[in-house]
Length: 100
Image 1: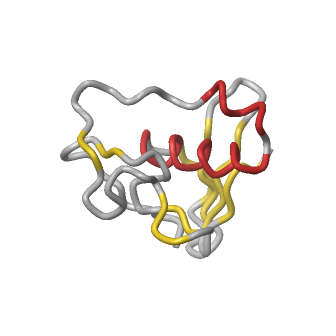
Image 2: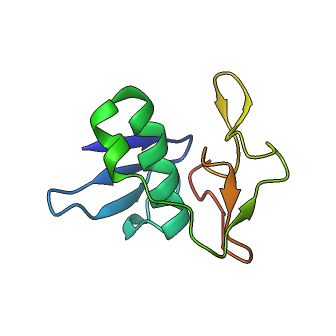
């Protein structure tokens, strides 16, 4: 099931619950979604499907409040912040979108 469509790739949920990235632009095929992309895709999909709210991760102890959105998860409605819409980030984590 597609959860998030970016400019260059799509994040899909498989029946097993794993989230995978399918690259459209570079035709590199399938790869496991990074932890950040998993969180971001679930957050985006939960906006359209309330049932997914229960699958969203809790803020880990090492997370810090996002400087860009000041913890709101939004830049300006309806845009989700680069923190993935959570309002927090994990220091040192790769947040490279890889999906345009």
